Length: 163
Image 1 (cartoon, one colour):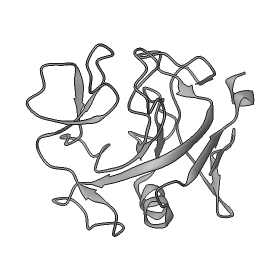
Image 2 (cartoon, helix red, strand yellow; image 1 turned 60 degrees about the horizontal axis):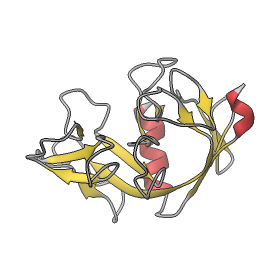
Image 3 (cartoon, one colour; image 1 turned 90 degrees about the horizontal axis):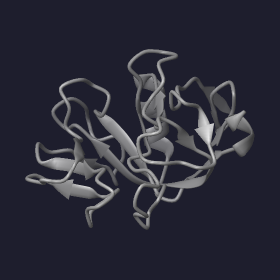
Image 4 (cartoon, one colour; image 1 turned 120 degrees about the vertical axis):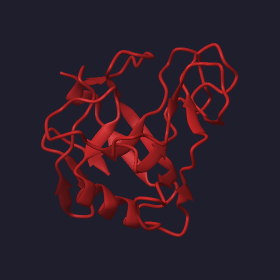
């Protein structure tokens, strides 16, 4: 997978997508609304079993207690966590459809405080709407990517996209 100015190029197809509202950055920080430049790898696939069928055998269901910690001072920073969690976090099971299907990445896998968390591939709100730093797609495109991706699939986000 390679992010381009026109979309995500993968397996001979160009998938329109949205990136962070602040564009691409080589100096990613928590809360900067930017997509990090670099070579990331797909690490997980999560889905809402009450809303869609399992997209691939390795997909994990999202339950009511599934969270992602975004508190740089917490030991679970940038990791899956379970409720209850007093630290700042995102709920993976949302009322809207944005996280019905999520591909997680290894961005900041070591959990370096403040370097950014929760860089996912997920459904977009609408075309052209920037994200908090994730890469977002139309649902049918995200489903296609999820069915074909595997753990370790490379995601290249060129520094040149940073402007």
